[in-house]
Image 1 (cartoon, rainbow, N blue to C red):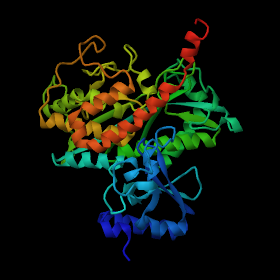
Image 2: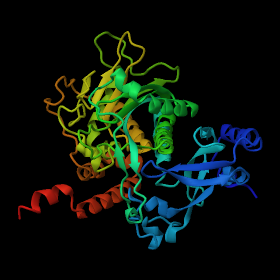
Image 3: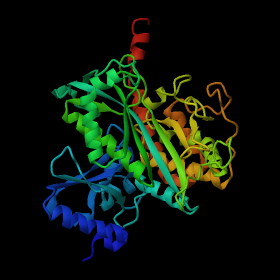
Image 4: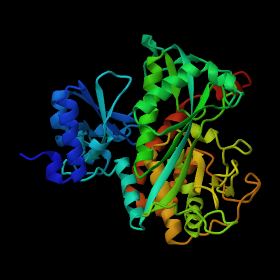
Length: 479
C-alpha cells in the first residue's frame, strides 16, 4: 500500500531525494536514536511527537497523527472550541470528537540538535485525513503568499532582528500548588542591571551565555550575524542575515525553541514575552527587515536615481504595508502584553508611518543608491508573533500595494508628531481591525481569520475575568 505522502502527492522530487538521504545517511547509519516531528501550531509554538529511529523511517512518508484538539488551544493550552460538537466546533468535517489530523515532515528542514545527543529534528506541515492542507495550518498560509509573489517573478527576502530576556532561574515553581492552566511563572533574578546599551563590559559579563547561544545556533545552521546587549535589564538581541522564501519564518520558530531549551538546560530562563513584569523593564520587539528579489538575483527595491528612497515597486510595496498596518497588527503583535509596547518616543511605533532611517517610524526605509541593497524594516512586531502569519501578512499587504500601485505618501521625519493612522492600542482593537480588513480576509481566508480571532478573543475574555494587581492596589483600601 502506498504511503500518505505518495497517495496525496505531497512531496517534490527534491523532498523524496532528501527523505531517502535522511533514512540512508542518518537513520540507517546509526547517527540518531530519536527523531522529533515538530509542527508549528497556531501560535507558532512547536508541538509534535518523538519517534525512535526505527519507527521514524516509516513516519517520514506516512506522517504522524495528532489530535485536532491541539488546533483548539489558546495560549494557556485551554481548549476554546466545543470539540464534541458537530465538526469539533470548527465547522469542519472530519474534526468531530477530537479526531486526528496528520503532520508530514518536510525533509529539507532536518537538523541534528546539538544540545540533545543523537536527536534529530524535522519541521512538519499539517494535512486533513484526505490529504488536503489543514485550513488552520499557518506554515501553509505563508507558502500561499510566497506562491502569489512568485507570479510576479519575485522572491521574498528577510532578515531577523530579535530582542528577548534571559534570567537566572531561581525557583521553577514545581511545588504541588503551583500547577494550573497556566501554572505559576518561575522566580528569576537578573543577569545584568541593564541601561548600559552595547557596552563591552556588560557583554563580557554575559559571555558564557552568549557563547552558549552562539555555538548552538550556528551548529543548527542558522544565519546568526550578531549578539548584542540590549538596553533593558537582562535583555539581549540577536540578528540574522537575509534568507529567502520560507527560511526566515522557519528560522524564527527554531531559534525561539532552541534558545528556551538551551537556556533551561543551563539553569536559565529565556522569554520572548514582550514586556515582562520586572522593575525597569524595557519592551522587546521583533524588527523584520524585508525586500524582494528578481529572478536574476537583483534587489527589486533598489532605486536607480540619487535621492530616491526605494524603487517604484518598493514604494508601492511600502504603500501596501502602510495601508493595511492596522489590519495586520494582530498578526505582528498577537498578545495582550504586546500592546504595552506601543507608546510615543519609545523606539516603538504608535502610528502607521514610514520614514528614511528613523527608528521612531513603523516602517524604516534603509539603503538606496550606492548601497548593497535597499530594504524596509517593519518595527511593529513583537517576538512572540507566529512568524508564518506575520510574514504572510507582510507579503499579502505588500503585494496588494504593488498590484494597486499604492502611494505611501511622504516620509514622516517626525514620526510621533506626523498625522497618520494610529495603530491599535489593544489586542481587542487589533482583532476588530483584522476582521474589517477585506484584503487579509480574502488572501488568508475568512475561515482562518475567524478561527484566529476566536482563539484570541477567548484569551481576552479570560484576562477580563482576572483581578489585576492594579485594581487591588487602586480600590481595596480606598473603598
